[in-house]
Image (cartoon, rainbow, N blue to C red; front, side, top):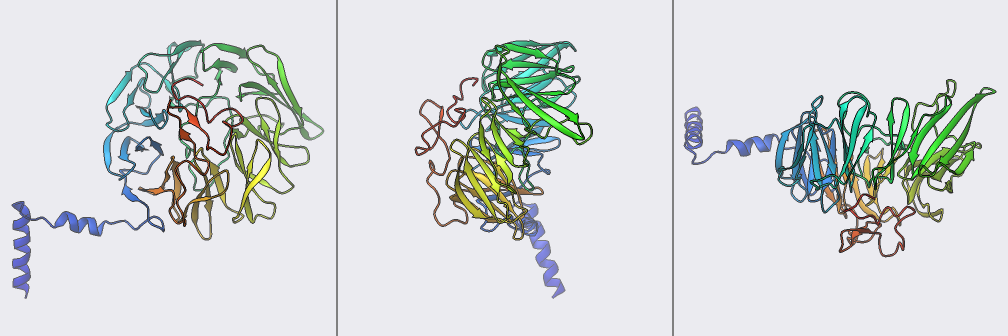
Length: 472
């Protein structure tokens, strides 16, 4: 028997060495096969080269940023398209014109790559910082520490749309998306902070330079304001306004006042007193954090302890929560709220301040909003659920301990460790939703975005109707 086994092994080795038949790769694939990361199973599941730092859906590709490498995979199959060395990577552009900006830490410059082929579309050798948006890419280079130029590019453009002078952009080489003075997103366990991918560039951006704030109009490149905050103030640029947030310590408490300025004229537009934007810590009311919110809206706490959503542009109260309710996620259109009894998650439409849907959820559930879906992460049992943010219709229900990494028009990427997989809308639900329903915006023939046919608007700040060809 041993002789026959030895003869068989020798035969297999000879066949493999001569290229006639090699069973070893197939055998190793079987041994190394990963367990499915969700139930129902994903469309595809692949093991990437390292633990992802970020994952972004870019058109028909998936861009996976790792510690020292970046790779692209086909969205339909998960097949690797290309891979290259890079210390950082960021996606700019929309569904029709995505690009990938890559670079190395402590090295000036970056390259703009085609996400499908990895080919270099544009190369820069002097930029120290890059900001990526759905309809714009910004970079900054500095001749000296106090002599910097900010340039705006279309995602696939070859010439800058405009340039602006800034007296600095911090010190050193900053890589991708250094922090600007805006809103601070609500976070959730098992939901990646970059789940929604790149957003449209805000109308105004606030650049902090040497204790001052330079407000830049992203449509023209004009620097509208150059302001130094007061001793008890923190500045933020949100919803096209410059907010002066004042926190005064008195009688053992912090007293807040929020004043919104039109940067173009310097005139006050609105003011609210007693609204705590959670910018200050308990020690002396020192403000070390940006206000919480997203896009053009702010989250504040009223004097009675109830959470409120405020329009950054005109100061309107878009929603005031009930006692005990907790905001989980917010954008310009919707808010996700945990009920006071911690048994439900409620979806509300901000424009009319009304409840759109309610679904059962545990007290430790987290949630996030994207243009295409609201994602809910539940524990005990561990699940990821994607729903239509307008009506609450289920798009995917997965029994999984994986994290939600990226959301696109037709599905989402989930991942656990080095394993990532693609979930198409309809997974675990009885009826897959039509492609242009469920709050998922579809493209117009000219490339601009439109809301679903039953929404009847572009959102409070027209954020669903921007043109991907312009700068706002």
